[in-house]
Length: 319
Length: 319
Image (cartoon, rainbow over the protein chains, first blue to last red):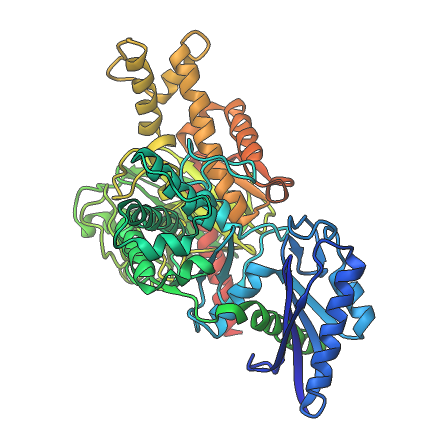
């Protein structure tokens, strides 16, 4: 019987989940409303159901050994607990994921921040496969980050590091929701890109449709001067941020995921060009900037890997 | 007989050096012109003399086991070799410190970037004593950086990381010598601070003395509005940069050294206040921002620790 691991990818709207061996190759998967607005009790109930479903689906194949969870917010990896809030899950702060889900399932539970879990998937099996030192950024409604140092996720002294979206690139720039000024999130997240487009349209005396999306902006760039300029500026802003990460981490690879990265490889090439132009020659010479490969499965597969690696380390420690 | 280690702190003008046991308590020290403008041969000759002098001074106390060297430029720690240039040592690029100094002295040689070596001294014995995760910045003519991760220096994939002075904080800011735009070095190094003061004086219609120094600016702040504003802005610029480092590393401590830090503790308190105001609450809540304690000895003592730790690890590996 094979050792199997369930991965749970928790969001404000959906719980995505899957089951696999330590290789991360999904044997079954699913998706349920997470009821993120409701109580912890309700959310844990959804998680418990998902685990039961994955267990039933693989009863003939192997034995469930552990559960991995990727959650929004700041997660104390050592304790498997939320230590900060998650805006889209208003009652989730303080949730004892390891304790509660462990009691409900009888399994060992490993929990981490959702961006960390995605970074794990991309650096083990995706676009950053094989890297020892890597940076992962996910560009969506916000910007999440993950840092791989010497092959392991770096979480910070109290699990509140790797907030790569909240690095200022303009000290007199746009105010950020986090309280800081000029964070890269304000320029390269979807809302940030849309704001740049609005500002350019306004400056050009154009009216900008109310419901503009980043897909629209990337789609019309060939015939829309302000859209093209928005993309140029966004690649530059990202290049500025990534040049800083490059000079600090001298990483082998920077992996960019999230909805904005789906704009395509041409955009990622522009970001790589800007980064290499701005970063120090020695720090950037062997750097690759690449698009994430795991797509929507990064969270689920990363959570499975988190569980598989945690389980393996614990077994080693006991041996 | 005690195991002793020589530390060499190489600069463009001076070679500073000392000798100590693994505790870093200096038993003897010295200083010679480094002849940084001259050939590698000449510089290695000065280093060799310094080692001989330290050996003679401690012949009764113990046995020299290894040499540690802090050098400007990008140093491949594994090979003990310069892999990038050092502007103040025009012929130093490519110098094989381990090979050449090893041949001349018969001792094992460990070499690293000078800021890394200072970071080691401050995090082992100075203001960051005991920290597992720490950031070190030295503010002088330029800005050097060191990163401690899980108790060890983080050097990057190819030893070109930890260039903390070359992180942009303004994407449309001052051009940097490194080719980037808006690097913190352009705002918080001594020349950067002086530039801020000149700009403020000019805007106020004042003439600024040609030979103004940061000591002057800090000294006259009580009666000079532009000087006071320069200090306020510099603390803010540093706070912006440090808020980014805090959100990325969630360090226990950030240690600030170099000539600018000698402006005093009141200035460091301002920098800490700005950092904590701007960084994410969870990342900054337990952070300390402190002034370096090792002063001029940081380079020498750090080089000694580099040698002592390298020697201990190698011995362990052989055992």
